[in-house]
Length: 335
Image (cartoon, rainbow, N blue to C red; front, side, top):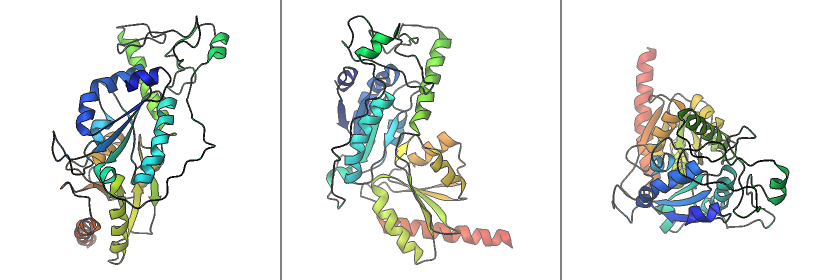
């Protein structure tokens, strides 16, 4: 229903948790390949399967990033508090329309069910919706022929129309099968490869549109910390506590995927980085390593997956222990 609404020009969304992402997987692939805007709100909770449905986790990162079969990559937004959820909701609809692709707002149960203190929600009435590349009647009148999947601007994003915009121009078949630039069915492998390459080009275009990371640099000889989502309050508190122990942290809050240049520069400027996550398999770390070819020696997992919100004391104890070991080994090598 949400895909159909967006295809028709409305702004449709659906909300779910991890099992719903699994069930929606085939249709997410349809929206990705047919290039139809879609917004999905995923309030992550304990898994796998039914898991702990009343407990929080951050365990759907990879499931959302690569949802569906075949070569798919999706845009993800990671709010860190209810204010972010409010702001990113509006941002997600603009991104979905601009990029003509599914966009996930990846929240978690801590934000979805618990009480939070955050900034007041405020909407700017002067803001206008960004519907992206949509050809109206006048625009269709001016062109000789319409190709739904023509990349005229070389950014991977094609022009679309809404059904019924023009009585003679703008019609095309929407299909989940392979197609050429004019939406005609094809099993030509070279044409299909060109389409997949263009979709990857569109994904790279998204790096300039998604929210940038928030970076905090706190002096020389600092180790790095990457975090996202509801881990933010615990990480900020842990930073202050660790400073009293002469352990300085440079922080980077990931707010979106695909990752932009700031993410890679932060990683390049640190020889050790702790990736704080509320899942067993350190999924954000895996995503960063897969997308950037980053060494496992640099990115060090710091995971918490009891289902309770992560606490500052947990982060402080883990980083203190590992930093003592790191500096001890470093002194031995220097001798």
